[in-house]
Image (tube, rainbow, N blue to C red; front, side, top):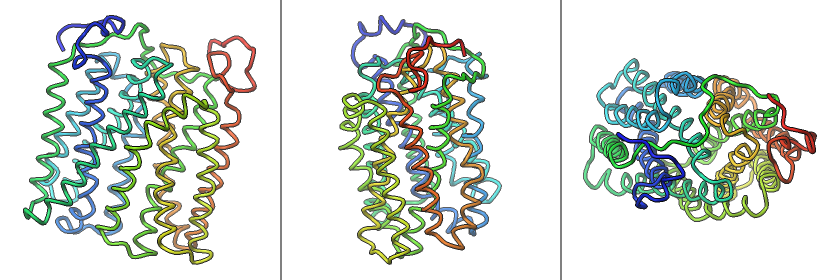
Length: 410
């Protein structure tokens, strides 16, 4: 990455050196480490480190701290180009994943988790910024769908290889972590040497900004993070606690979700392009309200395991439509606001992750159905917010209340 190339001139490069190709390679490199780390985590900490419930709670709290502090990216890009920072973050994720099994004690696992989480969350923050800067607005929905499908495909490969080889070859945690982290590092090395540094036409503001005219985007991000925590923490937990799912059955649900994402994510991107961000998000939130109410029905009415599993898959697919939130911001943002706002939005999205799982864990002990009823209420709130998105969002037309007004300075 010795020379710089303007984004407008990148079209003259061979396909294997263009910005979109780099986005696809990074989208594949990240889940090779993260998906493997996640798939083995629970078994590793229980079998090797003898974790109990309190220990795993601390681990997940530590894991979410870097997401809450993602706003720190703004300070780093003052000194480091965003593309370089993305590769550094992926390197940190790969190294931490490869070294995970070397530290089988509480302190070591928490330290490695913190390092890998910094790499993951800082990469995700910068990657979102690069996607919105590098992808043309008219093609962004479709390309975001394809990128999501590529990431899902890489995760699927990681899961299938683990399932097929873990017992057949009597693999160790150390071997699998080394291989997955090493593959990420190999891909990062290729990306560092094969691609020039791409320069977007609009320099990014390198300080934290909060624009009044982005208020709806901020609220939608907060609600998205809160709903996702309920799904991530409690939907899978319900399948194990209430229905007694074994590891292979839970993994089977993950695989179904991944295949569905690979097939449907490009179609979702096309749907956003055809029907617009408002209609797509309204459809998503109506679907999530129904899914969360049905989750409650599993406890209220004793509905069966097949319905619960189907709801789990639908839940995951509805969340994939959140790419419309990215393209909504792309359309209303000033070009120089994308990087700092991506960092601020990532932090806002993770506010709930700091406290919501712990609080709702106590509510779960009283009534699991109340947890899902609260999630349905959050989805309904998001639905009300989505109805405030105009049909054709643009600077100065960020909400239905701003139509016809000139874009304000902040």
